[in-house]
Length: 300
Ligand code: ATP
Image 1 (tube, rainbow, N blue to C red):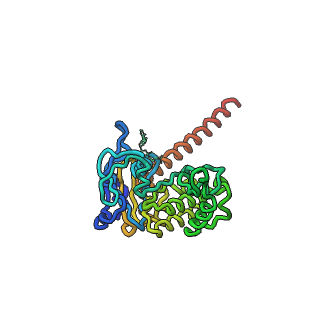
Image 2: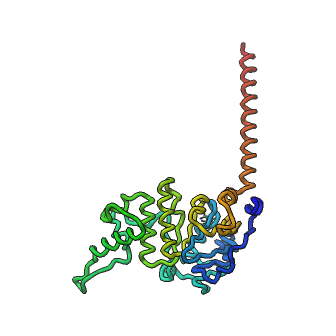
Image 3: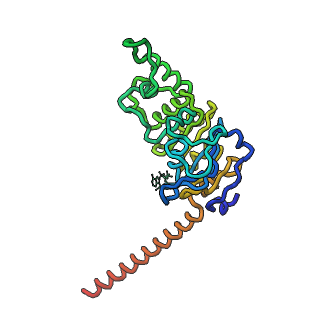
């Protein structure tokens, strides 16, 4: 693939069409408008069990809109949204969850002062006893949380600590383990590494891969091509709401993905503009110096 084709809007390389039948979730030519604002137009995406589909795009590319459609928050205006091959319009996030689609947002909806295990079960707390003797089953929640985290390879010191005391990366990992534990088939991750340093990003990506290895289909939203390339096997590029590229891992290199993400020709244009601006500034400075010398000369 050439850099030129990688940066052309609306140009897509064919993504393995034969696999379409097995997609857990598929968007086919999906569009979404907010009034006359085009948030998404003609976007296609496939999510397969045991696969990671990455959605890459800069600010305003339409990533959040895409998540909202898959998560059941917004309805698409055109195209098809299929779950297990069946055309679907989700009525609510609850319905998305019931259909096995779990979404982990960047600002994880946790209660910081509550222990890790309490957050793990938030909204789905097991109880024991009957009638007036019904109580939260704290021991079960604690033990299950510990075991579920360990199964994903997450060894937290203490599941009793308030979740607010965990690092951002650890909290993301708990959220991923939670989705796996509650039986999600599709896991949508909204820029899970955006606010993290290099090391923590690596840890989170490890658990993203662990979710894939557990058989889930993962949608990884990111603006970082390096993170996407490390774990992803399909890449959908969005640019101002339009799909500017769609690739499988074997059809693109990290360099090409990075160049495409950076905007290729746009980046070259910016570099020229910067050179020009730097040149102008130096010229002005040189003229300023001469003027100053002249002014100093006048007063003497
Ligand atoms: P960012 O990374 O900055 O959050 P994004 O890729 O998630 O960007 P979206 O938030 O999906 O992009 O926005 C895509 C376009 O749709 C933008 O032009 C945005 O202004 C517009 N948009 C998003 N939500 C709405 C809304 N509720 N009403 C009107 N326009 C909207």
